Image 1 (cartoon, rainbow, N blue to C red):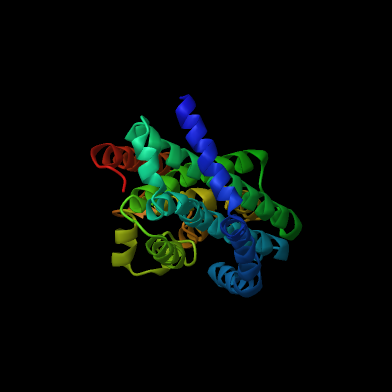
Image 2 (spheres, rainbow, N blue to C red):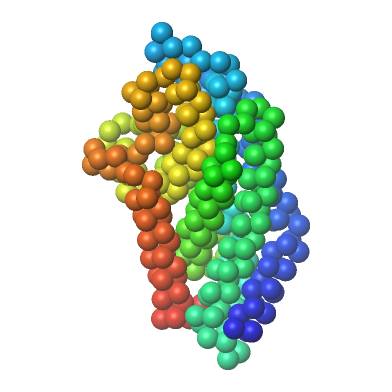
Length: 297
C-alpha cells in the first residue's frame, strides 16, 4: 500500500509539474463554456422555443435556464473523458522515454504499477473536472439557476462516475500506445469525436434511428444523460409549475436526451447508473488484467 501511495504521489507530481499539460487540461472546459455560451446559446434558445406548443408561453428566464443546463451538462460530460486522456499522457510518456523499464526492474508488481497510474490519473482528472464544475455552477448562478442542493449533489456524483469511466477507458487504450505522438493523436480524435457520440454536442434524438440504436450501446451516452438530467431537473419542475403538461415535459426530455431509449424502452436513471458502473468495473478489470499478463514496455 505504501509503494502504491509513493507511485501515485510521484505520478501526480509529474503531471502537475508539466504546466503546459495541466494548464491546457484546466483551461479547456472554461474555453468550451465561453464558446458554447457565445455561439450555441441562441441556437439552443431557438430550438426550445420551437419545441414548445403554441399555446404555452414560458418566461425568458426559464428558457435561459434550459440553455444553461444544456451548456454545462455538455461541457462536463465531455471534459470528464477528454481530460482523462490528457492526464494519462504520463503513462505513455514513461514508456516512450524508458522510465517504465526502470520501474519494472524494482520489486513492484505490475498490478500495483498499473493501479498507481490509474489512481493518479483519476485524482488529477477529478481535481480538474470538479474545478470545471465549480466554474459552470458560478455561470449557472449568474445566467439562470434552478438547481436544488440534491441536484448539485447528484451532479457531482455523476461527474465522479463518469471520470472513473473516462480514466478506465483512457488507461486501457493508453496501455497499447508507446509514443507521445500516438497518445496525442488519440487524444485529438477523442476530443473531436467523443462529444458527438455521447450526445453532448448534438442530442442523440436528432440522429437517425439506426444511429440512435447504435449509440444506445455506449456507456458514455448514459453518463451524459445523467449529468443532463440533474442539470435540467429544476427547470423542468418550474416549467411544469407554470402549466406545462406531462406530455410537453416528456417531449423536452426526449429532445434533450434526458430520456434515453434502448430498443424502444425508456431507460430509467437507476439503470443508467448500473450501466455506467458496470462498464467502468469491466474496463478497470481489463486494464489490470492486461498489465498483469503482459509487461509494460
